Image (cartoon, rainbow, N blue to C red; front, side):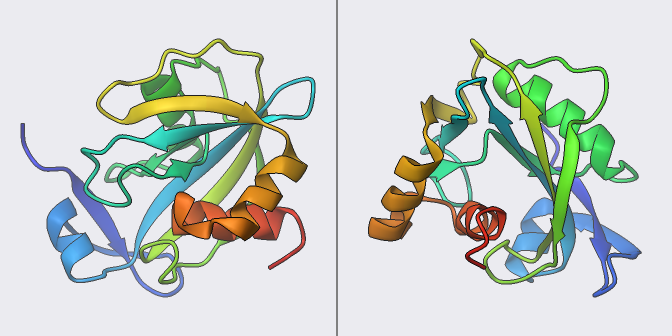
Length: 167
């Protein structure tokens, strides 16, 4: 399997080149990603626990679906694709955009658009990407994150705090 190629971007999220995934991460180059938070009718959010085989942040809890943009792909198309690939949720258009996070250490130098969608599941989790998943009440999740931040991917922790007015 050939290595993914990412668009490399500058500090204004403008494409300035392309590079292999391993080099983008090794050199801390700025690039693009999406995070999608899926909520059910009870207001719970679905989180995935990342597979131990992931090259970054293995075995920690993360957004419902997330991933890098392919070269030339836009954020909305990536959100639709990642939902389908990671949790088997097929949508016709991107969920609602919530906010954009600038590239920083916590995001792994990714500019991230954060989306919010709704579904009751059940989901079909991609076994190479996701160990397990579960629904969590926002208050319970915020308390867990405050008590054990290392249980979560840093990008998700940043997104959750911002979503809840704590960042």
